[in-house]
Image (cartoon, rainbow, N blue to C red):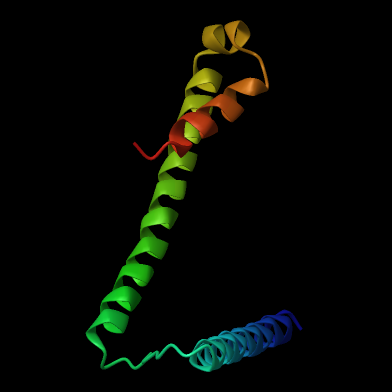
Length: 110
């Protein structure tokens, strides 16, 4: 019964990804049509170097921001673990604002 649930969930995720892809494609096509009606010309072909470079940069930025987020979570978790490990520090700083401050500190990407 458990494997049937896992199979159903995986199939549902596949349908959701396919639906999201078709929605994104429909939005892109409608945007190109609206821009062409206004008198501008667009060539969103993958053979266009500008589109190809933009696609690579877009894919890279997705992974970059994911890495920033995971790094911030790691630093915040390590600070909480260190407070738990050394009970003296935990008694001094037993406030719920500490993880919040750590998250905002790590959110700055500089």
